[in-house]
Length: 195
Image 1: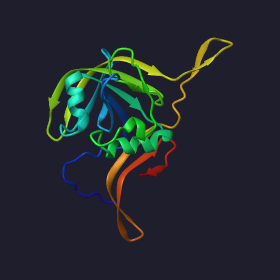
Image 2: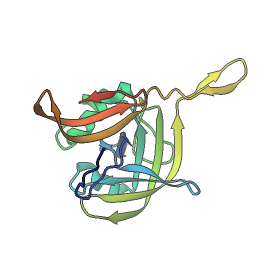
Image 3: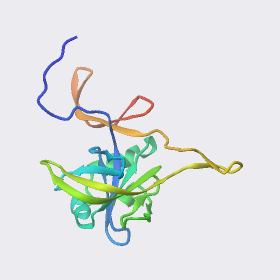
């Protein structure tokens, strides 16, 4: 087996596909899908998202200094894809995707009730890197679904479902024809979900 050279780029896959909610629960809010996200530090707990400045949500996040990282599952794949390819300038993603706004504990932006884990974040720094600007943030609260055993009053399980990951965006050769695959996701059970 041999290797070939590629031009410099991003080849670290899979990545978590998350929906980021931003804005204000009382006035204007939006959801965008982000794959450029992750942990920066354990103590203090810090995370980041990278967003293109031309995105509708960019100014909301920059102005408010807050966002929520909402983890996704296989059950949220259609909403995850839709929120990544449609602009909040043109459509209310909450209504179109049938998602529920829920009040967060430490930030003004809503969290997505259908998400199994919501990570509330407050921006501490914005790094203007090029195509994307990185919002570095303190994690201020985490909400998660849990199953409590009523007899022993103990948390028994975290029902994440099947976590969703972003695999790649590219053209694939299928049946001797080049087919554009807009986005490709995979779940933790190791099969691909093409959108």
